[in-house]
Structure formats: C-alpha cells, structure tokens
Length: 163
Image (cartoon, rainbow, N blue to C red; front, top):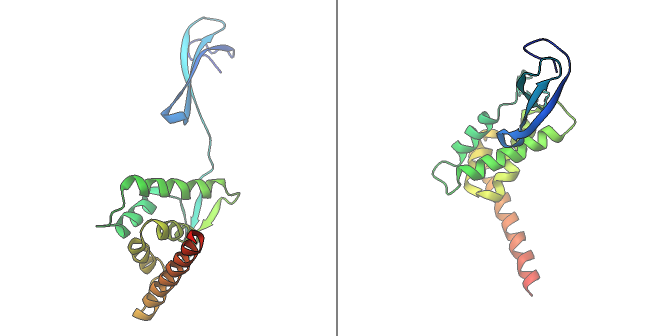
C-alpha cells in the first residue's frame, strides 16, 4: 500500500477491525519510511448481477425494487418489514451464489412467490396476480385452487404424522 504522505510502497498493518457489519475491513497502517500513520479500507469486490427483463432489456439488480413489489403485495397484511427484508436477503444471496451473472426477471419472481406462499397466502396471490399478469377470473381461480389443494395435502400429511 502506497503511503499518501511520501509515496513509499511499504507499510505495516498496526490494527485491523471489521466495519459495516463485516462488509469492510478498516486497517490502520504505518509507513516504513516516514513513519506516518494512515487508514485504509478493504471492500469485497462484487460483480453486479444483471436482470434480463421480459422485453429482453437488461438492468442491474435492485433489491429495493423487489422489496417495493413485496411491500405492495403485503399491504394491510400481518407481515413485518423485517420478514420481507429477510426474504429479499435470501433471494439476493441465492442469486449471488449462483454462477450466473445474468438472471431472468421471471426467475426472481418465482423465488419471491415460492417464499411468499409460506409467509402469507393472500400476499402470494396478490404478487402472483401482478407477476403472472392474470388475464381473467379463471386464471385467478386456478391459482386459488392450487393453493387449496396444497393446503389439503399438507393437512393430510400432518394428520398422518400425528397418528
């Protein structure tokens, strides 16, 4: 690390500590030539995640956009902001951990619906109706019937486990 005072290339680390919940490391350094001290920060370099939209345009993944859509779906529902932020964290981590640097917006929507279904069924249907662009009441009813079938299967499984 080059000294900001004399330009010498060698310094020693005197102190290191994490900052920003472990996202960065603050290092206190001392120049080996002039002896002056300075601070540096190390940040993990990430490659941006690109979202391929339905119209084939591309944009950088924006977690706040996903959170806004989930908040709209959960409006007046008993779902906390912390729960939704955690859901967005999980989806973002899943996307970052995949080897793909580009992801279809439809995949992000599927991940969100998969998680919402377990959190709140009404919010799930709201999100799905916008995301899947339900064209008529039959499409809407098909989705509701699918939820009811899943719920009945789960009840039967739970009852069998109790017996």
